[in-house]
Length: 121
Image 1 (tube, rainbow, N blue to C red):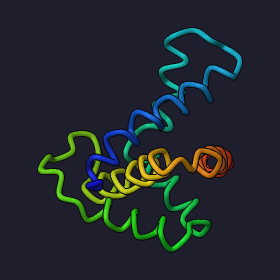
Image 2 (cartoon, rainbow, N blue to C red):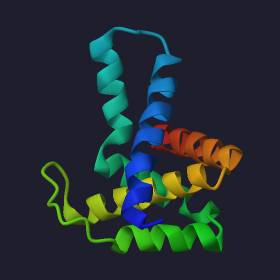
Image 3 (cartoon, rainbow, N blue to C red):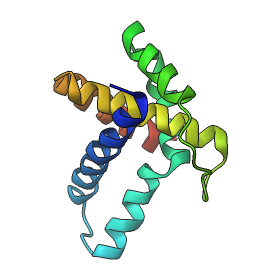
């Protein structure tokens, strides 16, 4: 599957994971939930999360990340720099790849690890 197609589904899968993560916390007001969620779904946050989990990736997962990072989306990011945008696309490609290959335990583990590491910063 093309890296941008993996990123497309990876974006949706990650969005659900983020929503589950923030809703499990106190203060369930919609505005607060939205603010908390945007801390994870921005291109900058996704690029940082990828950098934090990258040492844990297998060679195959690293290949998917490389392909996602190098994919030409044809769009220019509005709220992110190009480098963060490409790394965020790579992260979403990885999420999509793990989802489609049925590696759901691995997917959950990497996302949870990423949340923990990002929140420690």
